[in-house]
Length: 281
Image (cartoon, rainbow, N blue to C red; front, top):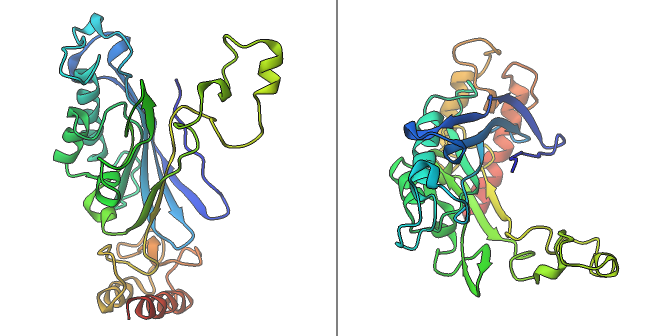
């Protein structure tokens, strides 16, 4: 299983990427204990930086007997200790700013193979991350996966406190979990005719998990508090006239990406300020 992150170069710029975190977590040994996480810092077209960590934690159906992490019967399946240790290692790693971008906004996404009340998600919440599905929809109402006729959320988006204030919306796109397995991309147990007949060039059953859609960032919010006000004007004044490499240079205020914060950028910021003021009235 490989993780990756795709982004539109028309609306975002990759600032920094980190070598994947690939460690045997918590001194566990063997391939069962491996955590692989890809982290990238992205500057979007409204000049806000977001560090995104893409993950795929060990599945409940995997065997973790080689690291003494079997199914204990508590409902969390195989490898729960491994997933929890992975969550803790990931949170610790993100604290080190692995991309070197100095960005305040961090989001953890991916198939964490743990439901909302299970130990790995609890560990990330204890580390300061907010479960956005629970916050925006409610974990009892949401689902991204169906197994044995039961549904729940295995696919998560968790944000740190800075980014949580800037989340504007979230939805689970139900294109996969509700669809029959016969329509997926696997060809096992299908005749040659069924492989062709069951295929359709659309989005449905492109996976067995449903994707999450998260809308984040408030245009013009330079102090990351979720609004655009005079405090952001003060933040802009501190970086006005500063260029890349200078102490007070803020790339989030460099709207035209010229490498320097100018009055042209101020006009962009002021436009966002006016738009936000109209929306909140």
